[in-house]
Length: 113
Length: 114
Image 1 (cartoon, rainbow over the protein chains, first blue to last red):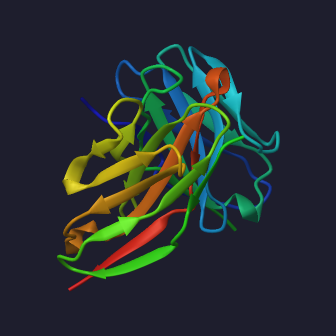
Image 2 (tube, rainbow over the protein chains, first blue to last red; image 1 turned 90 degrees about the vertical axis):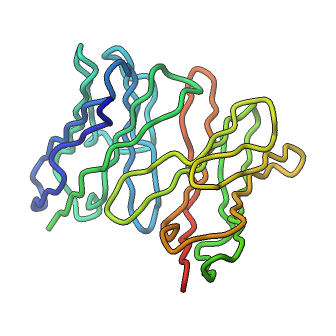
């Protein structure tokens, strides 16, 4: 079974631009979570989607948004990029919400100049 | 709210030596505990998890962890490490009921030297 895939793997943007990252979960998984990883803050939870609905949200500004499609694929969008948004963005999928194990993709490394 | 503390940011060891990576958590409700490993330029890979039952959990690559409820700890151990174990290790706690989410520690960089 194929793992979680994320595209693109690397991205360079400039301040003020917006970006969209994509995540395809493991087949059959209906929950997708997004995390931001930076050297200073570590891994921080952005949001979780299940059945096209946002179930939970972390403490990030409204510039960070996401959505999930009927095939469980998910996208996250960051508008008006700031230098501090440079990070590795990780997507994780699980069968259901709750205590299910989350399986991570390789991440998208975003550099904001 | 839950939190996770990984007591050591870096742990250097020699090859074939034993290692313990420490993790303490705080949560007001029942928790599920995980250890993940991250190799350079990769995502996180699950090493092992504790959901319920036996407090000693065995995972992949010879790792094991013990859940200690009274000390709110979930330390990761391996009796003999290899060069290939060099990576960053993350402890995570999952809780929150209907608002379930994973909270991660800051990570421990394990460096295995020859």
